[in-house]
Length: 298
Ligand code: GDP
Picture (cartoon, rainbow, N blue to C red):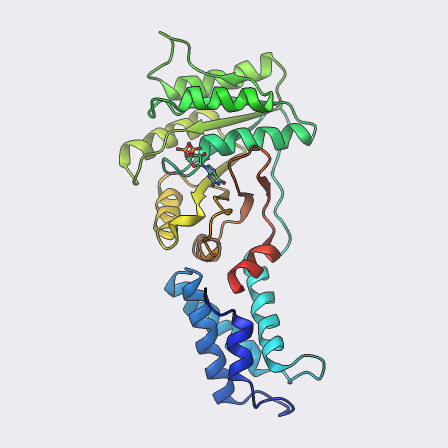
């Protein structure tokens, strides 16, 4: 495995203790180590550059503290910067003031949308909400069935097209689901949409049509943390194509270092709201910037 940033810096700073202030050479050596650590964590290059420049700037002004050794001090600066970029405090979900809250999920096929839809439904139920799952992924043959199975597992009903009515019309299903939620007194509607293996104009148009038909309170972009550097291009394509309010990172139980989170937030300005970390319905939580910062640095 890779050396942690603390180990690297401990080496860099072996002879530094008690010098009073970091020299320019110390700062350059530090910057190099941070750069390597971030690249190893799969952070996109332009984000690494900007980040390292910001940390250099901060490190220049700092006195070497008595309490922390220089390595610990720089790790703390890097950690604080990471937490601040990743959103500081956890961003809360926004609920509609009147009528059902509509949450639309968008992302590539395999990102984990259908699984996430049910996890989110369970989480909302635990918050005292009454969610309705909506199957608008009518592209992938098994997606409706998968949502129904997961819906059953978490005890949340699924609104899906009936045979002969709406099978080829995800936009119609999405629109009707809101009336259904009102009629059956569900206060949150979670719309699962179709993805493709790659970004594709037709998929994007369908997502835009569903968005326009349902006017979601939150569009969440669901992205697999394991895709590393590709996450950034995909995140940008969905931002340009559909637009979204927040990001959900999935598959954080894998060995991805989490650089995707930093890259996406830095380049899109959108917060990560939830984290999904396993195949069980309870493997899901609000995103915690401090935990992710730790993961990027370890
Ligand atoms: P969709 O095509 O975006 O709807 O993706 P799915 O929800 O079908 O997920 C694709 C695959 O990833 C499935 O095999 C899921 O069980 C799996 N999956 C989803 N979320 C996670 C996660 O957080 N961790 C792991 N390990 N697997 C996940």
